[in-house]
Length: 440
Image 1 (spheres, rainbow, N blue to C red):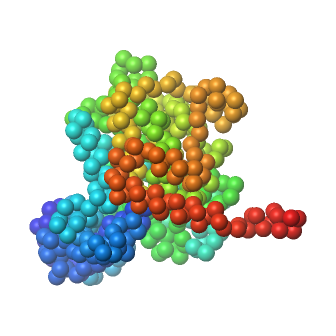
Image 2 (image 1 turned 180 degrees about the vertical axis):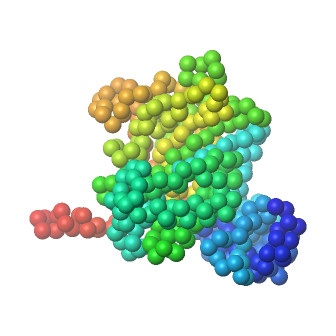
Image 3 (image 1 turned 90 degrees about the vertical axis):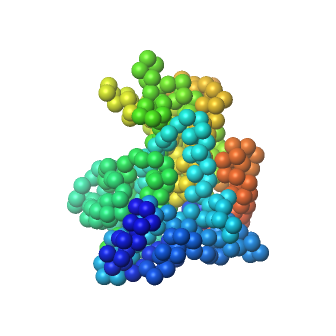
């Protein structure tokens, strides 16, 4: 839609409220509502707000910000009443002089996409697979079922929740490919169809809210926490990605033994080379590193393969006639990341690989979890950081992150994550008390 189409839709559809959405630096949704009487002004001039109250944004002495609605993102919220309906638009954040705000995660992704365009790539396609858990409520982790991967009813009691969630997502303009029970008890996955990265980042923040809203209608709680259950798989956000020049997939080469072009190989090498630096973005919480441990399907070893899902990057096998489907799957992000920053940093890492001609190692097709430490060392296979503190220490010295995020986001994010790590490591946990209090 453009501005005029939004105004007409609101008038003809009896829309009373329009919610304006954007995210803070860590990807938490922020929103405020305007009435239809303010819509024309908002579309023309944006709406002011206090940036000092948004995590990672401005200091109080320079706090005035403008939320500028993107009319192409207008959708009605299907879980709200039809009478006096509610619409939403996702916003770009501007400074008072109407320039893009450098702390806006959406702008960080826009800058990454502009770099790709300058290098000749018209499309950066991504297809994320967001996993999540259903629990009885937000006060604990009482599961709804004990189903496993692809299980159907009666073990999978959440089939109706997934069904209604898919219908709501489709009403929001999000194309869905699959929905199914995942490996863990009460764990689920709904896969969005790939699209251009900015649209998919917008869809991802919408997806997380829709999943929670539909769960709430059923009286249960949905969480994207990376590792809520001890001893079970955590939730990931495997992200498929490819670059296109016009209608041609830049990753495909029919003559290569792996059907990968030089650009595709260098892109993957960029992801592997910079994976540890990026970890603070795609696995940004203390809890993220409870998921990133060997043995629970979350890849922690920096290698690539074609069929082996224990590697950090997987290149799905090529099938004749499916040249456009050639892609790489980056398997370590989790669904609690900020998708704007995650897609941006992966793109920058891959583009660095292409620009600087990084060389891709041979694929590792064996199960990397079965190798000993010495065997992995001999093969040159490194691990991702084992804690948020470790990830922050690596990220602090990353030129890639500074370039990709910009000085403002980089500094604020490092500051936030240092504080989170300090708050966590100074806690005395129930595990420590159970293990030590009665014997030490």
